[in-house]
Structures are given as C-alpha cells and as structure tokens.
Length: 310
Image 1 (cartoon, one colour):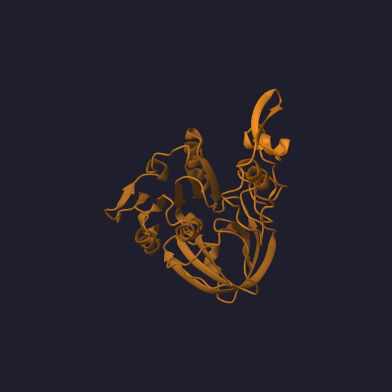
Image 2 (cartoon, rainbow, N blue to C red):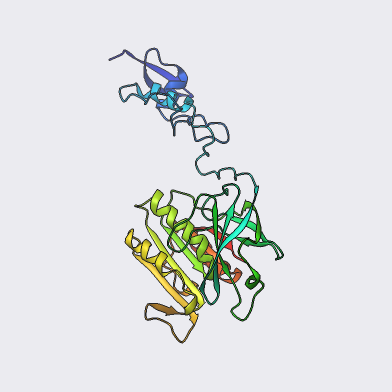
C-alpha cells in the first residue's frame, strides 16, 4: 500500500496517496466532474476506444477516475441524453414490384430500389409514385416481417370508395427522399409504449420488430386501432410479437358490425395503458390520434415521439 498524505483542495482536506496529482485527488473525492468528450461522442469513460484495454479493477480510484475521464470514446456515438445527429438525406429511385390489398382501407406497396434505403425504424420518407402527389410514408416490413435488402415496404391508407392510389401499377417509377422526421426507434430507456392508428401500424411494426431483436427484455405495450374493425390487418404481425413475449396488446375500432370479440370499442386514446413518466411513447397515425396521445404523454412527463401519416 502506498504512503498517504493530506492535501487541501478548495479548503477541504483530502487524504490521497503520494504521487497522485491534485486533479486525481479531486476526481477521486467527487469534488469535480469527469471531463466531457467532444460533441458527437459518448461521455468520456462510457466506452473504450478501439484497441484499448479494459480498465484494471486494481488501479487506484483516483487514477482510474482520471483514466476514465480522459479515455477517448467510440467515434460518432452520442453524448448521453443528447440526440444523435440525423443521417444525411438521400434520394433513392426504383420501381413498384408488389401491390397487395391488406384490408378495404390499407394497401401494402413494395418498391425495389437501385440502392439500399437509409434511415432507422420509425423514420419517414417523402415518396413520389410517378403521376401521383408526394406522400410522407414510413418504410416498414411486410406483415409477416420479411423484406429484401433493396426493397422498401409501405402500408398506405386508401379510401375504400375510390382513391388515386388505385392507379398504382407494377413497374411504376418511384422516388424516395429521406429519412425525415424524428419518430425513429431509440434503444434504451423505460417501458416502450407503441400506439398505431390505421396505416400508422407500418411505422410501429418496424419499431416493434427492431426492439424485440435489439432489446428482447425491454417491457413493451402495444395499442392498435382503426376506424373500422375490418382494417385491423396486422394480426399476423401481432401474433409474432406475442410469441416473442409481448403480453399487452390491445386492439380497438371506432365502428364495425363485424367487430371480433377481442376488439374493443372506441378511440385509441381510451385504451392506452396507464402512462408513466419513465415511458417512451411512439405514436403513428392521423393527426387527431397523434395529438391526443401527445397530450396524455405530456400530462405525466413521458417522452413521446409522433409520426403523422398521410
């Protein structure tokens, strides 16, 4: 054991080993905080630099604190509590390769692109099918969870009485610009509460699927709604989530004479779990649903990430 001596720092007596610097002594006693890394990196000490050795548990506390404070972090990682920089916006082109009607009010459209799309689950893109207005859509997966590396899948709302999307054809050119929005999946945090209305399930399905792979132990609650019970097209997806351990899944519909027994009546906002301040809420759908859920989340101080679907 090294010799000890007394040192006065800011009028406070500190016992340290001889050979330690004043900085090491102050760090060891908690009198100053560790240095913060440069923007774009983790807080210093939260990650090892590539090729660096793990810290030794036998190192003196002051020296260990100093080493952690000065250790470089992995490049490109965000500071704790700070949003990572959004990925750069890119343009991708391709053609429509699949069109499938999932329900009276929902289409599944698959486009094959010349280059792999960018973005995280929950991000959106500005999508232009040739001859149609630009839509803001969320890339997702097929309802069975499959996709190809250069494919992009959309769940698109349509008017059952007739819609411009009915003009979509195979081999129709498509252009994507994105990612846009800030509703993307963020690993870590409290319970994940996912809320989807209508075609908004596409974005929520991408987030839920990613979370079950990345954080299988994270608590998750899911509420899915539609105006008509016939548009609850996602049962195959929900069955997969149940098999992976998601126990709380609620279905609801505003109307529908053919409402199954497991579908509750009324708006989504009436069937959410009791929100907590530690929850992380992702809500995707029409403006009114998204706004109602935002209000409920704000009332308890929960973080809420909205995704408004055209």
